[in-house]
Image (cartoon, rainbow, N blue to C red; front, top):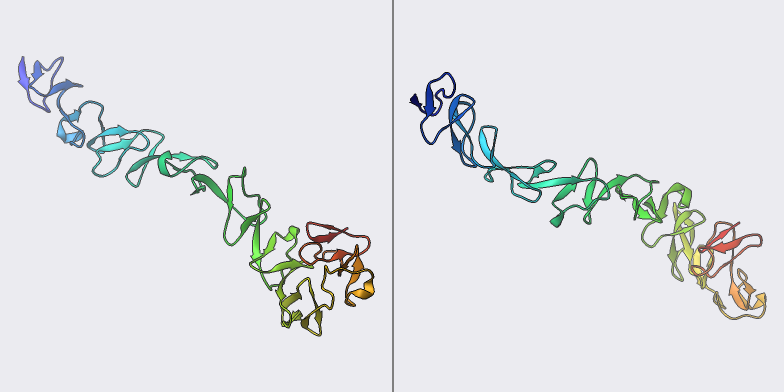
Length: 265
């Protein structure tokens, strides 16, 4: 038998064996290249050890968290994929991500606070157990994505999925700002201002009661004309939908009741 160099025919019918260090693979003498070495095609080389020929280069297989890509001589073992030079798996919504998890988020999910969450629109469920976050400008309030509003004409009740931003207070289904004594009150130029619990609106100006809301009384005559004596304290009366209790100190009109600081039927 003759001795064949790398690339030469070998094995049955060739009357040749391969000269070292080449070995006969599929009837052709091939050398073995280390990780990072050229392989396949005209190189007359296969990959040594656990390396595999991918794109003409011998690469080793890296697990999740291992280095990959240019300079690493490695590719990622399935189901991981190379992201930024590191092999990362993909977690579904609700799965752990980032940091030491070696995982990114699958599909439309985004890694927020170490958990894969999908974006929820205004009115959608959000918060713990939903694996969602609210898309800007909405925020998660009471387990539902709601949009912050101010002096606009939008309603701030539950069904419209809005809430009053900052110092605004939802009063009669619209957002109002509280004014101090001497400040303006009522609807003024598309804006809405209300007076504090111890004040009242008189001619568009907030003024202090002679006997403040919440002050002790024995009869309604002891209180300002806008208030009445109820359970030994001066209180104003709110209509259905108005604020009551701790926010304003008001009581609800007959036929309604105070629940979560609002008069309801």
